[in-house]
Every structure is written in C-alpha cells, then in structure tokens.
Length: 152
Image (tube, rainbow, N blue to C red; front, side):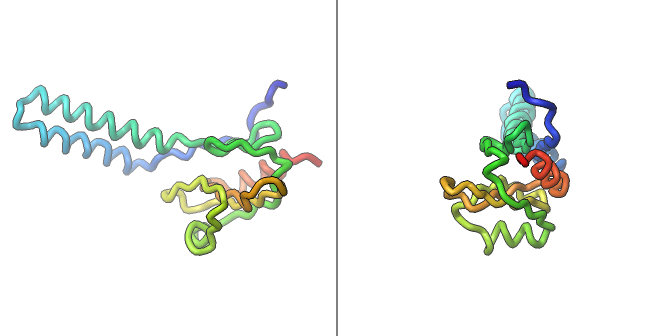
C-alpha cells in the first residue's frame, strides 16, 4: 500500500533558548578545561556544545503525523478508527490536563515549552488508554486532519 502525502505533519522542535543553553554548556566545559591549556579548552568548548546540542535536538525531534489511516505521534502509531473526538486545548486547559485532570493511563506526548495541545479520546474497547494528550503548536489543524482522515 502506497501512503499518500501527509495531510498533517509537525516536528516539535526545541525552543531557541535551548540552543543558547547548549552553547553555554560548551563555555562551561571550556572554563573547566582552561587550566589544562588552550587546546583542551577549545576541545571542551566544541565537545560540550556538541553534546548539549545533540541532547536538545533529540528531545526536540519528536514528530506528529497523520498519514493514511493512522496517527503517528512519537513512537506511537494509532489507527484513526480507534480514535474518538478531538478537543482543542488552549494554554490554561492544556496545563490543567497535564496536571490535576491527567489520567495516569493516558498517552502523553508532552512538551512543556508548547503551551497548546490536543486531547483525543481513544474509543477502542481493547485499549486501556482513555485518551491521547498531544502537545502541538497547531491543535486546530491537527484536529481537522484527524476528522478528515477518519473512515466514514
């Protein structure tokens, strides 16, 4: 089966400040290695920055896609037929569903630096997961893609 172009695709990239923090980690490593000379200091700057940047990039490389008849959120792949209503959450409501309204059985694709989210009911009776919580910068567009991709 050939999959068509994704009607929705989003990469949850790390914010710009994390890249500045990665550079500051490199500066810290350079300062630690400064007593050993110039070359170790430059190595610490390059190595510390690279390690911190890889960590920031890997955390920010999570993708949410609606492809064919499936929702792919991070490592999870869920058929659209097993999903119910999608609820767009503004910043306040998203915070509530991340904290005191949260169900421990829910699937959370959570990125705290993204204020908005989408909450999608799971209707499959075999699945113990009550809902999916997906951090997204465009919750309306994701909800629309889920509705458009559902079987009639």
